[in-house]
Image (cartoon, rainbow, N blue to C red; front, side):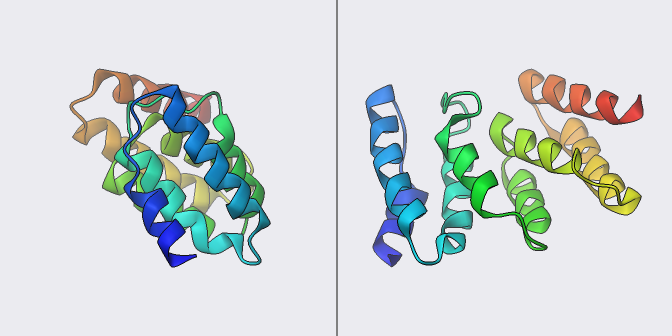
Amino acid sequence: MENLKQQLSALKLESQDDLRTVNHILETVKAATSPKEFLVPLLRLLENNPTFNFGMPGEVVRTIEQHYQDSDYLDLIIQSVERIPTEYNLWLLNRLMNTFDDEDKIKKGLSVFHKVKQGTDSDAIREIVQEFIENFDE
């Protein structure tokens, strides 16, 4: 399993054929006795391929959301966004925030969005983050 986690983290995706490789790996992840151990490698995959089209939301996001709803999940998503904000990890954070009743958790997520907005050079990322911020300001 360690080799599979390393392979997943290191993949550089260039074509939709590469996505087939990812989907094949995801089948193994889903069948693993402890799929949670793949959360960070899956997040790294998103980070290492920030412009790749994984789909909407795509199997990587579906797998993450299906298997990783616990107390550590928020912090791991935030760490991913802080390392390299991508459309997909920002989307994961936004979707997670939409489930919160706890105002402190929402404020924590909004703080991350504001940091990303101020710190990114990407207009696309800035626009995504602004939309998420506005959704919580309504």
